[in-house]
Image (cartoon, rainbow, N blue to C red; front, side, top):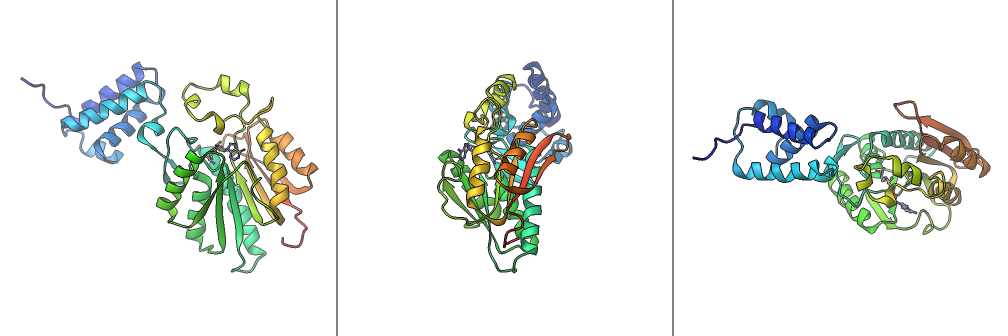
Length: 304
Ligand SMILES: C[S@@+](CC[C@H](N)C(=O)[O-])C[C@H]1O[C@@H](n2cnc3c(N)ncnc32)[C@H](O)[C@@H]1O
């Protein structure tokens, strides 16, 4: 005699217990997310359909997802998706999983775009580049906002040193804001750009030190090292290169907006001031930690 099929509620209880036993934090939430993925439903349906039995195909999909999560794979890689700026980004082991604190860089870049638009004609193009775009989180969030605000003169470019990341970002941009809205370039920081053509350089570059990497969880260590390690003793080597490159490509009045590690605000702000950026600000995240540096290139130049 075959055992009666498990209900949705029973499968959820068992999945939670299994992830707890495997030592995973947030077991209940992850179990819900994985059960939704296995059933192809949203979380509300887990409650509405709590007494519905799972069929054999759903059981085997759930088992495969739980085994991956129990072994320590981040839940976003297991489901292939992470929400950022209320948009569903496809993610995989070739890209960093977008973090909520990076929404601070999007906010600061939007403030920069609003300031630039106020000083320009409505049809004059404003060019934004997202350096180290990864999944495309920042540039796609900005393009989506620009569309809903009717900012049709903003042009979007995104860059990464990883071709695998660029493929994922291109797919996200096409699906979330439409084909041709964001242009993509392969490159090392801004070395491929000539002249001063950019109005906003925005970035969440790698900024962890080797010591930071040793101290972080095994789950973060599943993300690409090239997306995490910033080089140098304090992890700020790539940040320094980014600030110097931004000074070379920004038009007068343009903005640099970059995410930073919580201890890097002082050195990054000092470097920006040394290079003659003005209006240099270190902005906190929701936890009150230094998280973004925003600076204006020759703020009193002729384009502000
Ligand atoms: C911290 S991840 C940020 C990804 C995405 N912007 C986000 O916020 O989720 C940094 C990204 O920078 C890229 N990267 C690292 N060094 C780079 C370099 N020198 N030039 C261009 N991109 C680089 C990595 O491949 C990675 O995709």
